[in-house]
Structures are given as C-alpha cells and as structure tokens.
Length: 132
Image 1 (cartoon, rainbow, N blue to C red):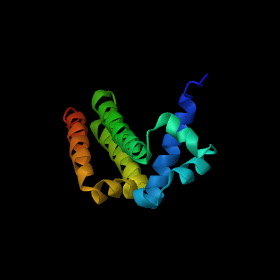
Image 2 (image 1 turned 30 degrees about the vertical axis):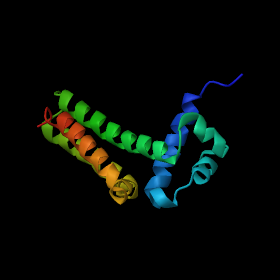
Image 3 (image 1 turned 180 degrees about the horizontal axis):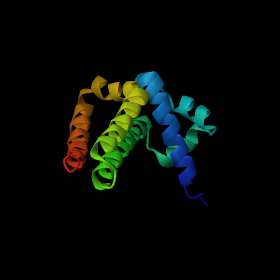
Image 4 (image 1 turned 45 degrees about the vertical axis):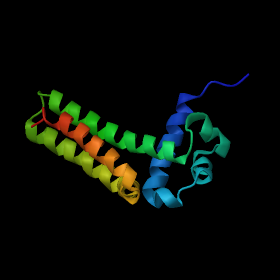
C-alpha cells in the first residue's frame, strides 16, 4: 500500500528547491542536492514532482504567488496609509528578487520559459492595478 503524500514534506522540498535554484541556478541544481538539503531520499521528491523541470516550475510559481498575495493584501488593506503599503509591497518584491535572482535567470536560459515570465508578469500586474 502506498503512503499518501505529506504536505509538510512537499513544502520543505519546495522551500529547499527555491533556495537551491536561487543559489546555484537551474543547470547546477540536482535532485540529489535538493534531497540532501531537505533530509530525504532523492526518490521521495518524485512522489511530489514528476521531474526537476516540474519542481523548477513549481518553485517559480511560488515566487509569483508570494508577490501576488502581497500585492493583493496591499491593495485591500485600506486602513494602512498608501505609502506604508507601497513600502511593504516593495520590500516583498526586493526580498523575492534578492533571494531568487539566479532562479529567475533560469527562466531566461531556456527560451520556452520566457512565456512563463510574461504570463506571471501579467498576473502580477492584474494584482497591482487595484493597488494603484
């Protein structure tokens, strides 16, 4: 009987992959490297992600989801002055860029992934429109 996937383990794999792809880039990051950092067997990653590319794409989605969430919260929280909300939003964006610039470079290293960047930028802009 197979075990059901553990959501906490999946989150840990994603966090470690986000860090690894961010530090090493796509090409230099291996499934074994991610598994070692997560403290799990390499085969366990395949319970949650089909392959390294699927894991990379999910890590990219995590970045955009974090930014989109911050933009949505900044737009909705009208009790806080606009300038404070803007600074908080820029802080989130700066932190994500600083921690993931190598990861984002992985998008540019493969031409097929540029559409992923375009789609996510459009999504982020839709969340930013109500803010401005």
